[in-house]
Image (cartoon, rainbow, N blue to C red):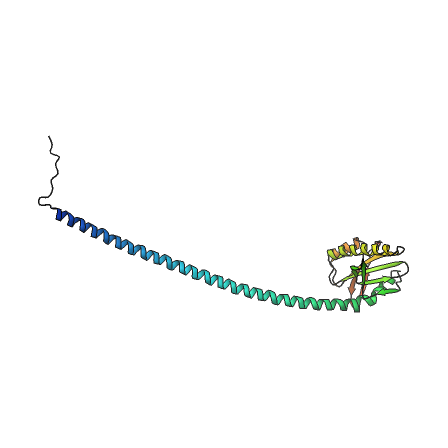
Length: 229
């Protein structure tokens, strides 16, 4: 029969065992303090990194705010300049009507055989039920025909469509006033006239009036017939 008994160190006492346990506890405590220090250092590093990121984010936001303020200033200055230029354009546009288009428009239409003997150079407002429903830049009239001329510095497609609506409004107003005997024709005048807009105007039955030097001319394509509204 084998001997399975354990041989303990002779002379081992409770005090020695307890002392060994205390030494082990001291080692464990030392390791705990060591790891606590490591964890604390890592926590401080993470906190420092977080604070640095927050600082960088704050600097980026500040930089973005400064760029936005500069952009807003540029937009504001551009807007003021645009309004100023639009005012100058409006004044130039008024000068175009007063000094270029209006004095020559009747003459140019008369060369086409209309012989207008009345011209409203300062425009005309059309009223319905006491309210202005449309405005016309220049109106020419004789005993048979009324011509409505819309003037734009640079006509576009929408201007042509709006003039078509204007013609219908004036026709309706004439009928309501009992003036149904006169023909109603339209024209678009422009200092700068894109070709595709000019074609659309002509296809819509409008005379096209363009600037040439210090006067104007009416572009009349071959076989062109104005639309009678």
